[in-house]
Image (cartoon, rainbow, N blue to C red; front, side):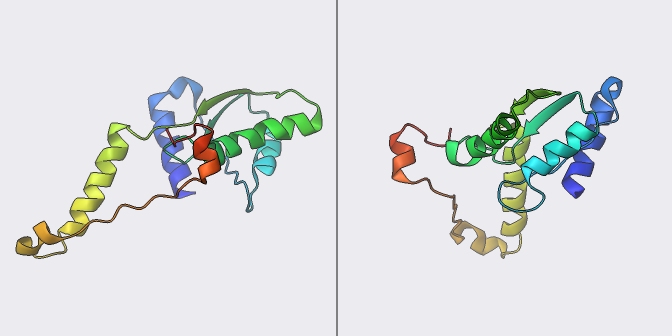
Amino acid sequence: AKHGDGMVKVLDELSPNTAPHKYYIGFRYVSPLTERAIEDMEKDGIERAIAFTQYPQYSCSTTGSSLNAIYRYYNSKGEKPKMKWSIIDRWPTHPLLIQCFADHIQKELSMFPAEKRGDVVILFSAHSLPMSVVNRGDRKS
C-alpha cells in the first residue's frame, strides 16, 4: 500500500486534471486476486485504468500471465470492459530503476571497509524461465 500511496501522490502532482488517482492491487495467486480488483474498479465506476505489472521485464510466464488474467476475467463474463485499459508491461532500462539499483548496491558496499570493497563479489540472481518458454522465443525482453 505504501508503494501505491506514493505512486498516486506523484500522479496527482503530475496530472492534476485527472486527479484524484486511485490504485487497486490484484495478484494472480494470492488475495487480493486480480478478478476482485477488477470487480472493485467496475463498482467504483473507474473509466480509465492502467495495468502496471511490477515485473520490469516482459515474459509471457509473468507479465503475460498477469495481463491475460484481465482478458480472462471479461471473457468469462462475456462482457467488454466498461473502462478503457492501458498497459505498462516492461521498463527494465528506465533510468530511475537503474539508479535505484545502483544506489542500493552503493549503500550495501559502503558497509564494507574501503580497502575491501574492490574484493566484494556481487551476485546477481534472476528468476529463470523453463526452456520450453525460451524455445518459443520468450527471453524476458
